[in-house]
Length: 315
Image 1 (tube, helix red, strand yellow):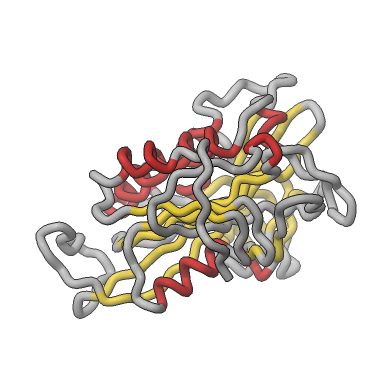
Image 2 (cartoon, one colour; image 1 turned 90 degrees about the vertical axis):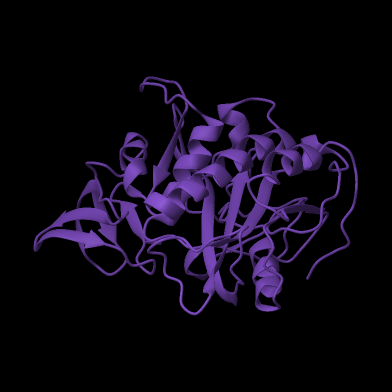
């Protein structure tokens, strides 16, 4: 459930509103001190008919959700390290965390109407956008930290200390009736029936500060290891505007134009992997629709199910 929005200075709500309102008429921003799950809140609003473009940010999340039902909590003394997508949106406020430097994770959800020709590969496209916003140029190997992508929705930090999960993405959709008008014409070829389209909620969670590894299968990474001193408000402003631009491009062209950019950061490329359904093989990148290509004993397999998890065999 939501706590009342608070206004403190430091969160770039006005800058985001000014940048995105021309692209998303009716766009609003809301910063909350605490919430159960930003994605859950935006989905509740969508099902209640509140389908305006919205960005919801929270400083603490008590019942966050990740892919395949995983949980993720954040806030003071949080020890969980699976930063899976979460956040939602609401009315514009100006604010700053009481102490931005003490926020251990950036948690946001962006909700907006979307009608792409093909939804395939959306979480991968979001990952590319976020990674490029946080590290525009990918360093070439060596001891330099690199921001990588693990199929289908994880951000990983790759540096001298090894490979560690940095964050995650959770994409959910809800149906709603959207009246057509001059402000939002139907997209040619989009999956739109009788004036309906989908309201997509994109949750993003990123570890900002180093986190304890107690109870985790591997220690998590943190954004401050990639960029010392970076804080949640600055990261938010860097991530969201390019993400909106990418989503509008995705609506018309899908994942295919981003395939090569994903390949440049693909953590699994060329590695032996095991799948949660018992299969194993070697990862050979992703297809134009975002499917993971795995060479198995039975031949090349295109993995598309969100219910299958993939791990390098060294994990």
